[in-house]
Length: 98
Image (cartoon, rainbow, N blue to C red; front, side, top):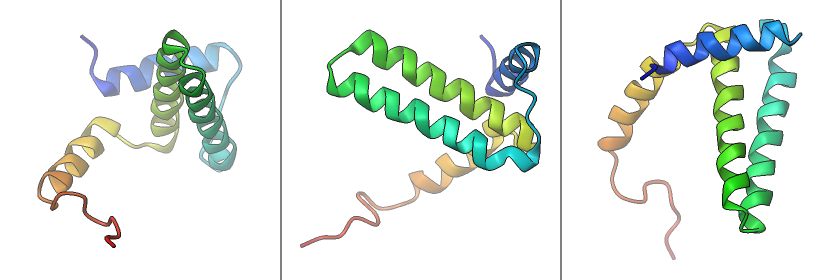
């Protein structure tokens, strides 16, 4: 099984081979493309298109992995660090209560 870092490398190589040569200065465009994939996932869920949802979630991961690689972020390390923080938080933290 590939690590997240492996996926970052694989999807970025594929993106470059298909003409998507991003640089750090392209972060706004990259994030907008990520947002569009999340929107497509939302649309698939709304339509109860579960296969479409799965595909759009995969597209979202691919975009995120590509952004992380371009920006020099080791997503696997960052996910582990953030998960450790989240584990120590109380239930429903940040949620406004009535």
